[in-house]
Amino acid sequence: MKRLSTFGLMLFFLIGILFGIQSLSAQTEEKSRDQIPEQYKWNLKDLYPSIEDWRKNKGELQVKMEKFSNYKGKLGQSGRMLQEALEYYSILAKDLGRLNAYATMLSDEDKRLAAPLGMEQEMTQLSTDFDKITAFGEPEILSIPAETMTRFFKEEPGLAEYRQFIDNIQRRKAHTLSESEEAIIAESGLIAGTAQNIYSILSNADLPRPTVKLSDGREVTLDAAGYATNRFSPVREDRIKVFNTFFTSLNDFRRTFGTQLNGEVQKNIFYKNVRKYNSCLESSLDRNNVPASVYYKLIENVNKNLPVLHRYMKLRQRMLGIDTLHYYDMYPSLIKNVPLNYSYDEATDIVKKALAVLGKDYTTTLDHAYKERWIDVYPSTGKRFGAYSAGDVYDVHPYILLNYNNKYDDMSTLAHELGHTMHSYFSNKNQPFIVADYPIFLAEVASTVNEALLIDYMLKEIKDPEKRLSILGNYLENYRTTLFRQTQFAEYELKIHAAGERGEALTGDKFTEIYLDILKRYYGHDQGVSVIDDLYGIEWAFIPHFYYNFYVFQYSTSFMASQALAEKLLSGKEDMVQKYLAFLSSGGSDYAIPTLKKVGIDMTSDDPFIIAINKMNKIMDEMEKILAGMKK
Ligand SMILES: [Zn+2]
Image 1 (spheres, protein in one colour):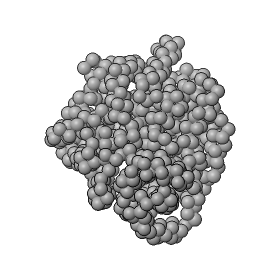
Image 2: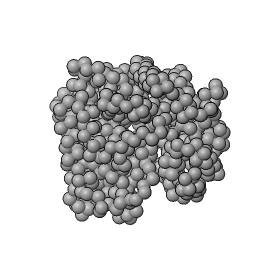
Image 3: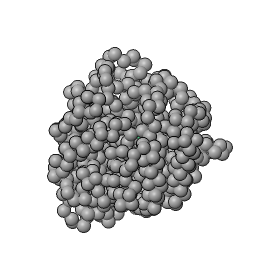
Image 4: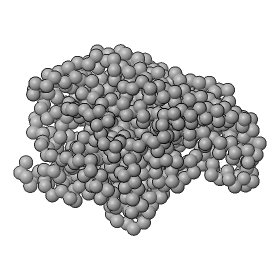
């Protein structure tokens, strides 16, 4: 038995990786954690006063967990018994989430420390135990006949709280196995992450890191972070050097990377087969009750609109003043030397003003987040890079990890993570624990709505044409890296899994061949829009998201939904804010697609995509107008 969102915390880390890596910049002087004032560090004491208390609570949970077995074989006895078991289950899951959050966040303060890392590993073990102990729940609930369940709901009014949870289990009847089979699947959890873990260790630690000497004499190490930082370099020769050196170093290990990714694909095929799904895609999407048609529609719409991406590519080429656009020209800012710097204190103020359109309830809660130390602001030695929001702490409040570095991007990340945090906060406040977590499909909606509102606010405030170009250019990059690039990844995932399902051999070279084909199509290689050198076909080895099992398409769908939502919120329709707050408060009380429909967004139609792509064209219209005015 699994609350939809036991995945919750993991999810936020993934988001952190995606959005964090861009704002990671070379730290010239890194502070140690104790040099940072308290007010800029999160207060984990809200979770547990001390590590001893954490440990005590963990011990208590272990004892409580064992007692859950007392319900084994009894869930179908009566509505009362079922309600009691689910209530007990909620208590366990809530504690587990809180213990997990504490261990992870403590460890993220300084990744070099062994003790918190050990606590994190203990939690992996405890979570696996939890899954094992509660494994009988789903099949037992499934075996309760529909008419009996109806009677249970009538007899036991308290059971109503669990209706969505129960429905979410019963709808997967065809894919849930016997109790002993489910126990075996739960047991496989410990080995299922091996491909991903090895990938992570290889690419983050063991892979030989080449160095290059840049035009300013600096010697930089090209690990993933070094590459991610230096691909933004305004000096083209430097970018060429960085790209070619980094991707050559990945290419040397294509066989190992290929074997790992094949391991991941085979794992997904294993679960699809044992759970009797037609495809890995269906198997993955069914967890959130999202129809595969939403996935296909996204890929279809993006492919149809590649000319809009190509329009941006031509604009980029013009603004960078180069003859032929190459893949290494994608990242540098369109406008050089526009200082868009904001201290953290300025950023909190600006973000609050930008989000004021969401009403007083929203901004008052923002103040709590700022003042009551929900946020860990600055980078320090050993701290986890990137940014995330951790919402799986029901009775307390969500937390945010940042690595704030005074750039516009950092301010935007703050708005983004606050979106997650507010979504969690309002849902936790308004929903019973069992359905408080919002569906993963909705995870990036509130965050990217905030980014859009921030951009809109900044464009109202800033009149300077160069600064406006810079912000609009940033927005376009969001479109490229979120709507287009993540769909490109989604398409790739679909293709490699389909190949695996057909029984084709998946080697490093094969992964590259499939990737290169998609990459060239997206960037208009054959139409002369840009030149994609064959070496960059190895880029798949740099992308951790291919280990996240059809996750990334939700960045694109969320982005699409949020662009449409932001347009509606800004249009000033009176009940829109109210509807939006209801959306933020709804958690997982309904499935994702109907939840979005209630706030006016129909993901099974083309409408959100059309709104989003129209907006992208409008951004380019305005940029071209400004450029014409500047005679550029
Ligand atoms: Zn996010």
